[in-house]
Amino acid sequence: MATSRSVRTPTTLPHKTGHEVTGFGWQDGGLTSSEHSSAHQGRAGAFRKTERNAMLNPADFPEPTLVPVNGVELEVFEAGRENAGRPIVLCHGWPEHAFSWRHQMPALAAAGYHVIAPNQRGYGNSSRPTEVTDYDIEHLSGDLVALLDHYGYEDATFVGHDWGAFVVWGLTLLHPERVNKVINLSLPYQERGEKPWIEFMEDMLGGDFYFVHFNRQPGVADAVFEAHTFQFLRNLYRKNEPPGEPRPGMALIDLARAETPLGEPLMSDSELAVLVSAFESSGFTGGINWYRNLDRNWHLLADVDPIIRQPALMIYGDRDVIARSENLAEFVPDVEVVSLDCGHWIQQEKPEETNQTIVKWLEQQDAT
Image (cartoon, rainbow, N blue to C red):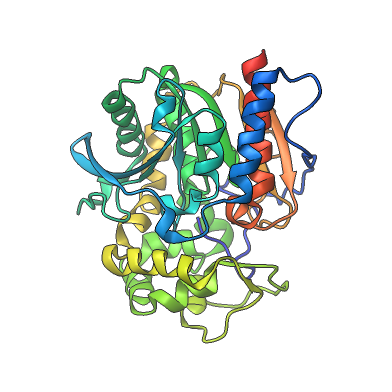
């Protein structure tokens, strides 16, 4: 669910109203308080030390393991294996990679968690099935359930950003017993609505809107992104972009062809090279196939209890073009909402604030 300032949509995934939601949140401050136990203070101190030395050198990122799950193999990166028994699973978005969690993995390990960050199916060196329907929410959530089984965990805390958030919401609906807490960034819970999501978007936003284009013109955008991989990712991973008006055409294709990026780079050249290399190897079709299952997912979720009953943390970026939910608490009653001063790539643009927010919330949950 990549976004750029030239991609405007009245909703995140559409719900019945189709209206833009501005909403509000509160900005979190420090990590610890005087009420924390000495054990929590020690853990927070380790967190702060790790934060100052966050993994910025790609060479410091953990080596992966290929794990067989659910009929495929996932490339999985881990930190904090010594914390076995306290799993937290990090689910990336599009077009991302487990590497997008490079700032969170050491901080969460220092906070006492066994951190598991898979490249989900279609990404990196994980399997890339050829059938489009192999990327629906049943398969994607089934991979995560099987990943827990591989490690011998009954349940875990799941963290998602962008498309990863959609998968975490869906996993929690389909397999609630395997999820003990939910932390999602950027994309709030999506009310199912009365019309399949792509149909709704086509009616509201037209055939050039990228969700619709991916579905109605399969292979076209994939080929453009693959022909301009470096340029597309360099132009996409930006921050502090100037506001711009929507233009005719498919915005992400135009972005891939643009010779000059806007705003400021989100990451160093060496960090960007990790993602460019990954997508030059894997291509983009596997990830885009997630979009091609949205209407299928709408049907698959028809008879599921729509309420998320687990404790949840929702982190928004104030300048993210993905809209906030206007009725989040109706579907996620035990939710806390935090807003950070950033755009779409929340955990990469504001890594320290993201880590503080997540770790503080987890500690509060442990205390209750």
